[in-house]
Image (cartoon, rainbow, N blue to C red; front, side, top):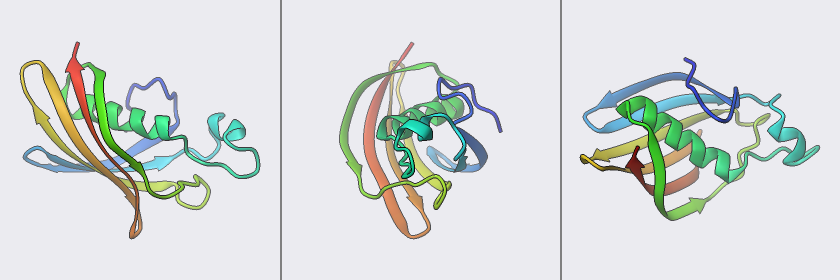
Length: 125
């Protein structure tokens, strides 16, 4: 599934399921994307800021709202995501929405490994 993103073909949303405000998305990173040629040559690592953008993209897709990052807390990068070794990621999003903002708690993993945990608040625009 294609999602409009500033990351431009960095990843593909393969599937998602939801129950209430809990979403589980399965994505695949594009290991041939230009970002990996510079981050880092010969040892590609998925940039943390790109992972945070994917959380925003998915939240916009699931809520139908355009968003602006207001705050980020408890951002913990716990494992390196190498797009050649572990391109398939599971992203769990707990999304709580009010009239003006959306709060998201995310856990991103591959296999049994948790790679990222974060809590963010977005302002609706």
